[in-house]
Amino acid sequence: MTTKPKPRVTVTTLRKMKREGEKIAMLTAYDASFARVLDNQGVDVVLVGDSLGMVVQGHETTVPVTIEEMVYHTRIVAKACQHALVIGDLPFMSYTSTDMALRNSARLMQEGGAHMVKLEGGAPQVATVAQLVHHGVPVCAHLGLQPQSVHKLGGYRVQGRDEAAARQMLDDAKALQDAGTDLLVLECVPVALAEQITQALEIPTIGIGAGRGCDGQVLVLHDMLGISAHAPKFSRDFIGFGATIPQAVASYVGAVKTGEFPADQHCFF
Ligand code: KIV
Image 1 (cartoon, protein in one colour):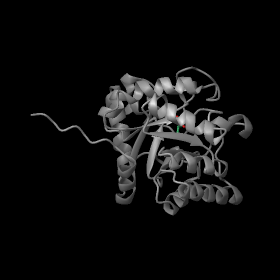
Image 2 (tube, protein in one colour; image 1 turned 90 degrees about the horizontal axis):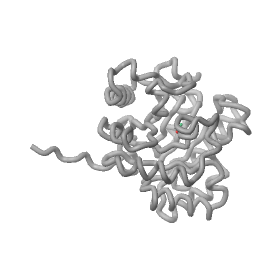
Image 3 (tube, protein in one colour; image 1 turned 180 degrees about the horizontal axis):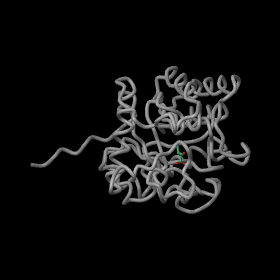
């Protein structure tokens, strides 16, 4: 008996999952072998993150990653994914004008095979997002800790702790949604604020160090496999829960879907 292949996850699927309360399981991947494992184990969204600068290339930050490298890694991941929606990350300084964002998003989609592009930033990115959306590019935005700005932020810190910063993040999230953003990553955000943003939006939110109140979760693959040089507090080593890499990925998907991950020790309050 042949089993029917699972249909491709699309932006419509993601909205439906939010409406129906099904949690979205997202992980990063940077090559075909891992991408195939993630796709086979039911990961809904595969992010080809510029975190590859740290976990693949061994840099201290994501800043050195180039668009050329992102196109290459997106291409080898996208080819291996039959089911998951694939997001290609726009790296540092590759979307400083709308024209540049359009050009580089076209590269991630046409040469890389991405189904969506991701960029970091709030209000300053709204006009760029509107133009990308106008030209048919699905967009994932990224608020809270924005790793491309780590030197400006002075380190990897929880964002949105004081009232003004929290209000600004909520306003930015709404403005990004109004501009046509399809998905929003919230990184290192206090649980209550991530919950408030999630409830205020129709688009799904994906948390990383942002608590269980988000519509889905993402982790850097190497962190959840326990092989990163410095895994952050908000990650969990899933290899401890499964003897093989496919089992660890399946454990992660299961834990996200049931709400068992993240637990309190992975959150900021
Ligand atoms: O680059 C990346 O992997 C990311 C995730 C941490 C969300 O942006």
